[in-house]
Amino acid sequence: MQILDINAANSLALTPTKRLERQFSSQYAEIMQTKGVKVWAPPPIKALSSWVSSVWLEMQDSGYPLAAGKALATNQQIIALWCKAIESAPLSETLLSSTALALAADGANKVIGRWGVLPEKLTEGETVEIEHFLKWRNIFNFHMKGSNWVDNEGAVRIIIQAIHDQCITLPDNIYIYALSLIHISEPTRP
Image (cartoon, rainbow, N blue to C red):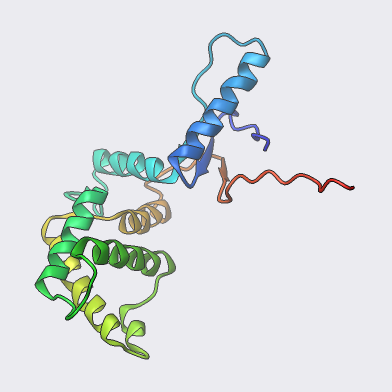
């Protein structure tokens, strides 16, 4: 793996995980040490979730209306709200705990948010599970709104709108690393 010239002024590299952020930063440090550099600014590498959090705080500081008065919910808060929703409308005869169902429901909700699936589309081919999920999702969304919380997917939608409204300035160069690091070597021949 090669790190692109991410240290160039006005650049940003986004990774899908904090682990990759640390790995890229470590690799960058090794490159700088190899070049004999003694002191350097941290490279502009961030995990997407870290970048969303920092941009969210910038929008709050600037008073961007769609972010005003809202807080990014933590994963623990989100799972707690899903548990609350599931416990208020439980599945009959399930062997799964509300926490296990909450994790599954949150995962499904994230996919729906990322792909922009409309909830009414979920009723096509409706099953008992989808019916329960939609009830839980309505309860979950009610509590999120009542708490003035937004999840990462909601924050990304608001950030995209802020970019369109020209309230956020993006760097000139953005590098997105979305694939896991796999070293593929050529097969050895007998």
